Length: 277
Image (cartoon, rainbow, N blue to C red):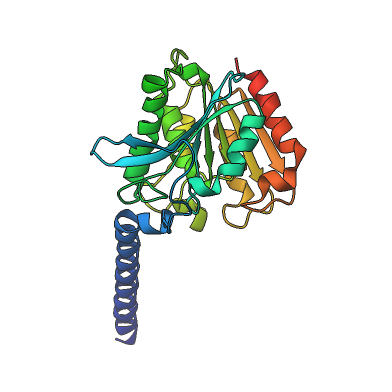
């Protein structure tokens, strides 16, 4: 009798624990799907009111995104910059100048909800905004796809890898020239939980890279990154197809990669650009 009661008790406890775990999982899944955009894209107040040569580019829904185009008459490639989630065009001025000094033309834009772009930030809007910027390059500025290099830093790796996957073909025809991914992740959810526990991802960079063919890729990551650990960069590099390069910056955290790397940062990018087929 006691054994039967004990068995019944443990069966009840097991049921309650399983039910609690299921409710917890569903709560996390619903939050991650419906509300995580606010955590991923916490757009703050704009750091600027206007900038020299500031553009306003219409999006498909009639809103506009702010953008800057800094041409370099001697450039072979134009860099399409997708920035991190805690910055806007006002924060990028010195970095834009640095890329121009490397011999690049630069096109940078703000996601909706950031800077002087209209609307609100969301993962879906970021994808659409990056496509809007890309189409402006090829249709309005008449820049050939094979003269465009994508640059994504941190969250900016999400739209950059998605663009790369959409605009490169197995044959390599009409492909963009290459992608630079700096301090970015394999997916947003796996920054917090290393293993995949949800049936979906937001900004699934690793999967996008896996679907990208014949594209030169440069991965840059600091070994002391406390926001997006270094192993994310290693995994992206391992996933990418050849040709690919990995620039490991010893001792660099999330936001100081270029300063810690020093001249090696610009020299590595310049040398990588020369290897693009």
